[in-house]
Length: 528
Ligand code: ADP
Image (cartoon, rainbow, N blue to C red):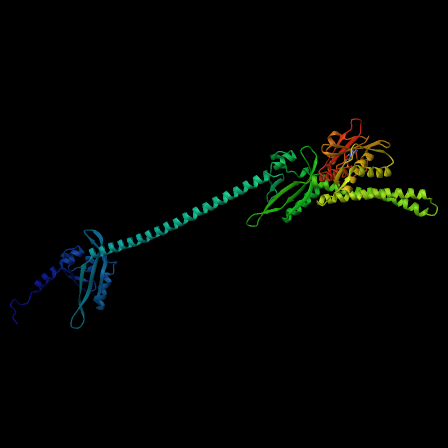
């Protein structure tokens, strides 16, 4: 082997070593006394060669609380290599402490006996790389966080959109509901204001919240007064307390409340009403108060009252002929052996009169009930009206000897009519003349012909008929003010008019020039 140049001196080796780019230093002893440090290491430390011979902490006191002294001890005392990648170190350079990063190693150098004779510290300054990595990592983190934020913003935007859609849908529904409610309220108001009924609404605490305008008209109270005071105080004293108690009870139980009562109109005249109050409930089932509708039932009620009076009167009217009939029969029974033929005939005639009266009455009632049920039918036939009138007058003269009945006729014509019904008309008219004209007065019956057909006039010498009542007396159950002293039902003339209308005839009443009333009826002439 040719050793042209010989071995290098230790100075030469150190010189080379000091020039190596990898920063190295050699330490010995527990205090890591610096044996040597190349330029690169001195540069890292920010020191000059004066640090050689000093302990590590004397040279670099700032690393005292950092892990490096301990690592050195591990290498020096335990003979273990300690290393790190990109490890941070706080170093004071030019009086300023900054963080630097190193790939480093504390390598124990051992002799043949495996004793540690020195520790070789090598370090590469990777500050730039680490900072770059950190910057990249930070940037990545920022990007991730920004990405996350972006995703969140997108999600938020989605949610916002959904919420917006939901909100607009909700707004739309609320708006629709409001429109529906106001429309239904409007509809209710239109209905409530356009009806003949009295409509009132109360809330769950029984406060008055609404009255339709009709209440003002009927009670004469202003709306403000109605809302403040109500109307129950107006109820007739006979029904008031009962009404209040029953209403309270229904209100407590949230039940339907119905009752009839009287209340004065604006002129102070009492009228009958039927009050119907169903409870109101909201869509969630909670009680919302009552809605009251009051219907004027005065007509129906009066009719009911009149009907009851009518039934009472029928019983009374039938009792009179029945009593007489009973009397005649009693007489005939007790005197059967002693009675002569004239007396017997007289009693029998009187009995027959009473029976006829009752038959006529019952026939009249039957006709009324048939009229009401719409089943009054005519049994029409062709006959001479004059003859029928004569028959009726004969019978009436026989029944009533109290008045003088005369008959005159200027024609002899045929009619196509229901004999029984026309004779019922005559019985009513002549019967009324007897009832309403004084004893002994004349009743004239005249039959004549005019352009409409046949006309019959029944004229009496009684009290006559007031002009204002000429039409009213043909109403059902109508009796004029002066009539109550005279027995009657107020159905006779009503029945006459209905019968004549069915025959396409007519009937009317007038006062006669010389006192008394006169009734006319016409029937169409029947062409033979
Ligand atoms: P009623 O005689 O049973 O009361 P009507 O229907 O026959 O019933 O008569 C109705 C009313 O017309 C009577 O209440 C009476 O006031 C009046 N009226 C009828 N006929 C006469 C008459 N000839 N004179 C005066 N008033 C009469």
